[in-house]
Amino acid sequence: VGAVRGAVGPDVDVMIDVVNRLTPAEAIAVGRSLEEFNLYFFEDPIEPENMDQWEYVAANVPMPLAMGERLYTIYQFLDLLNHRGAAFVRPDLSLAGGITNIKKIAAIAEANYVGVVPHNPLSPVSTAACLQLAACIPNFAIQELPTGEHEPPKSEIVKSAVQVEEGFLIVPDTPGIGVEL
Image (cartoon, rainbow, N blue to C red; front, side):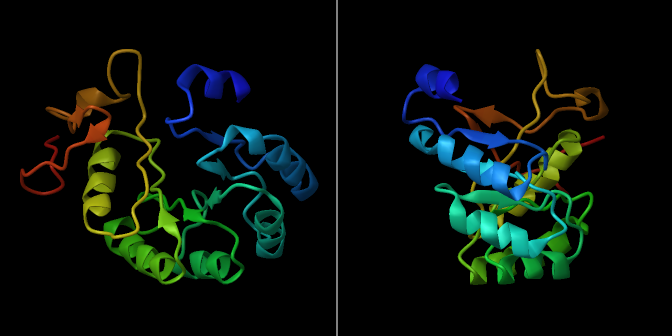
């Protein structure tokens, strides 16, 4: 993390994801050891099932936590928010009910002053759907964008992927979610 921060400087947001691999004690220790690197967020340090532990970890690390890519109901996100377990929720449109349900999750997050960072590991279709969601929620924070060596994975399934200009995804003005299969 230090090497990345050194390479990109202080003006680039750096996030880490340990994919639910740590115990609460390990997550707190790792979080504290990374404080000097000014992370935008620390994603999914522990398993998502125990919200009491999420609250404990969130209260004891010096950076915001992001969580939720493995949650799939509005009630699970409400439980997370009621426990103050994350500064950012990471709903996955393909897992947590699509655009309509994620808008509901985003509204609950907004009422709790929590940002939304849609989880997006799948395809240009998922990216296009996430982009439409991002354009219509006030607490959108940042968008995950899968990349490949030359173009995003599975780009062959759409006629053209959403456009990126100077690091920003451009909301398309074409019908539907903006991509054609």
